[in-house]
Image (cartoon, helix red, strand yellow):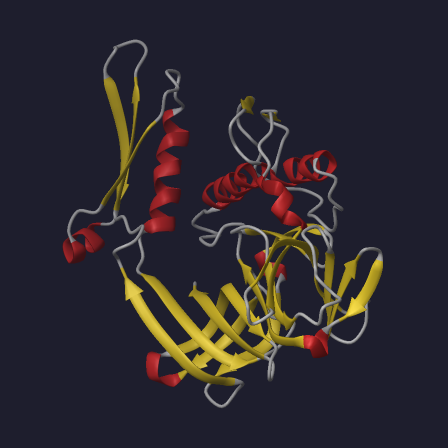
Length: 328
């Protein structure tokens, strides 16, 4: 593992200077973060804007590529540095036009890369969900608009034939902005009992974003009265009581069939217990947010593929990782 920084046009390899190095990556929750600590020797003082590169064995075996955004030091002369990958630029607000019937999560991501001077990488050639109506975003960040499109794509591609829907990941993969279908990010890796894991925690909840009734209303233009459509799961209502999601749409010429289908899609999304599993494991560089691994923990009945929601790699004194996974 090598940690390099470009400071005043000189590249330094500082791995052996560091007492702490960690890299955190979360699924569709902003840029990944590299943090490290080193002892100031009176010569190298890293500055904001310096380019940082973390690799496994060489420049072609990249893990993190980004820029320094925070530097601090106390009387102990320990310099603490925080760097982000280029998705940090996606927090910029802009005038972002969305063309109905044409724009997708891919086209808007490509537009962000052009506007924010980011390097675009691999993205799907076609996306089934397109923005239904043209509109302009004035107060949103690029990254939030893209995350909204990822969520809309997931909701609108869930069907009885494909209850999982299409879920995309926006990520910076060693200096290239990519959109990946999570189904293409399956790793041939088992984590759990007797397989790299040395600790776990587990939780199931209906306290967050759980709904067994979904209702959508709109104002009917002809009658001047509010109209509604809804979907519900009676078994879940009997077990947990009424847990209702409600949304009002402003479109006076609402398509009732599409709204009814939307209630079904939202019910598929929200009508299940949220299960959170955290694993403490021996480190593996291939594990990033959005990837899926096979989880195997007998105590909690885990014996299936799970998606990595967040992972923090720690490199000193040995490479370990803390994972939060989503059981789908």
